[in-house]
Length: 343
Image (cartoon, rainbow, N blue to C red; front, side, top):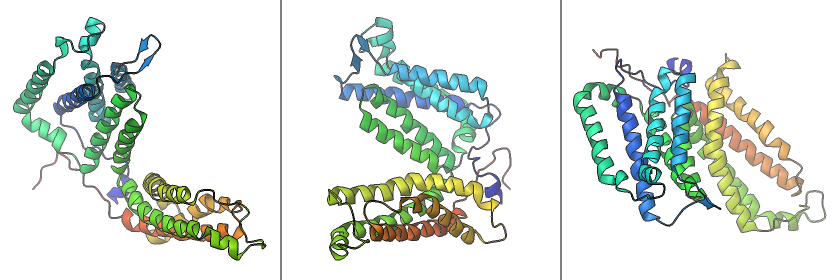
């Protein structure tokens, strides 16, 4: 029951002194600094310029620092300060990588921001923090659940994507940001259960739609001249097949499954309370099928095609509901409280 009462509370308590926050901030700083430095070394000629304006990645860093500064004032919640520390460190690293450029008005390779200097300073800060406050850091950093760690890894990946966006490398940036967002969402066990169920149900839908697309010509030939015959042709069968697999497995399975998992966590205990979780999962799948699949009936591909497609969707959504109910109770977290002694 504790899992149901704390569905979205994935953050472990902080220690009283909170020295681990400086460690996380410095770690984010080092990650962003060396990440952007390595990128600049490997891609020295990649820049974003629009007329006389040269857009540098320190602007993204300033944006991160400003954002968490405002959030720290407006939403000063203890459960979020570790997240603020990581984002602040990432932003400071992006700005720090271009300190020389800012101070010299154009010399990115200035000795003011040499890797050795920043590396030594960062190492000293991290080492001194670990040596002096080792026990406190262990409480604030390592005494967290894997759910919370997934959030911090996802934040780092999403933050590093700013390097690619800064140089107009949209595709790598989107990939890195998407992975980071997926990891953040996956930190919630309801979302993880939804992803697991969505991948399986998405695979069922993908396999059924793949067979349907492959046999589209047979349907058209067999039922030619009848009301069941398709009224429109699929122009590129290969492209359509790839699209079906991508949408059903990735978009519907991973992203859609995670979102629907969070929705199920919110609403499953508000209806059919006397019924089992499995029954509520089946009802949830039926509702999804009614609202997400039935409206697509009546397309230009013909009544028979639409009927088979809707039946495939029914099987997939029912599978999702059953699997969601099954996985939902298994993805439980155990957040340790450092204020309590283990006997």
